[in-house]
Image (cartoon, rainbow, N blue to C red):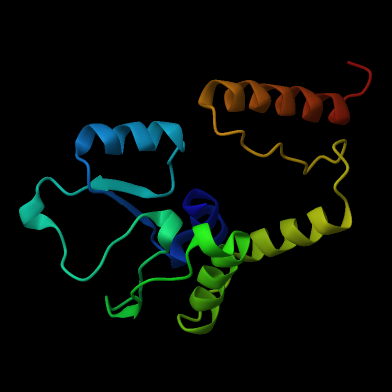
Length: 153
């Protein structure tokens, strides 16, 4: 979800995935979730562990503003609220931090709502969470786009 947000909000928000289980696990998470726009980092030892902050992403997120002040020590937990937990994060970003999605993202979302047709030039297959399959799907999307641009090819 953070990767999706990072792309949605662009440079107005910086998302960090901080692993508490060391570099190897952080690297694996980076691969597993195909992190490109999210800063993927780790805490090297217990001595660096923050006091009073931190939990698994499925248990909520920590949000700070552009000055580093904490806006939320813990958002709603995905395990309890499902997708509404992600809506809660977006509400905090948009209301308390005055961050709105990039204009391009708003337009794309409106187009998707209006037309979910897979033959639309803007249609993107959602990630399945497996890098090799996602890469194959990107190739299929490219072929579909080419076919829509040049149907006689």
